[in-house]
Amino acid sequence: MAKDRHDNRDNHMNHKGKNPMKTKITIAIVTLALAAPAMAGNDDEIARRTQESRKVVKTFMGKLKGELQKAMKSGGPVKAIEVCRNKAPLIAGEMSQQTGWRVARTSLKYRNPNNAPDAWEQLVLKEFEARKAKGEDVRKLEHAEIVTVDGQKQFRYMKAIPTGKVCLTCHGEKLDPAVAQTLNQFYPHDKARGFRVGDIRGAFTITQPM
Image (cartoon, rainbow, N blue to C red; front, side, top):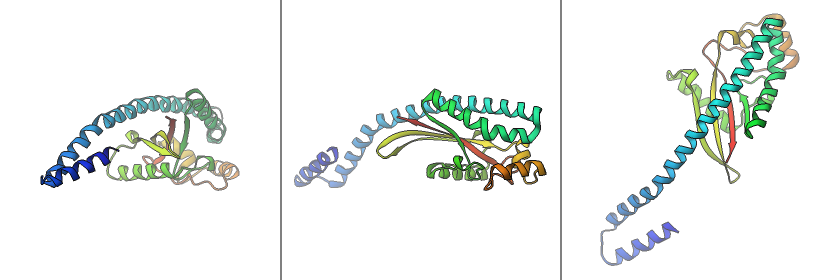
């Protein structure tokens, strides 16, 4: 309706012989002024939800790291595979239940088909790779935005997972035969191999309903 009012104003002023270019510039300024508060509010919402998401990712990461360390001490890499296979989904489920959000992990080179990225996640992961190629620190890579899906707004957040030295035990280029055998048993279509230290292993991903 605002556009219709502006169009009517244009026609009225043009009939009186005023400069149409001047009219368009004035309208553009008014439109931007009206949009500014909404844009600012949107930025505040993204900032607030980003902070909340960072806390959840930190908790998720801490719990998973703790379980992996215990598994490595008690049974080595093969035991750690069981943690990633069984405990990681449970942790994600608990975090999702506690927050009311979707909390998960994903990757372009995923191991579990249940963690395959959706279209939006694929785009962000590819953006992370491009940013890494330009020299950005993988540990600081994150992305947040508000998207609309089927007419409903959602806040989406992703935080990159860097590949550390310990990750190479199960995700590196050369795997111990026992590790490779276990992975082949549980994940016959495994894509999560061939990583090097500093690569983007994947990302934590969060979807918050709005």
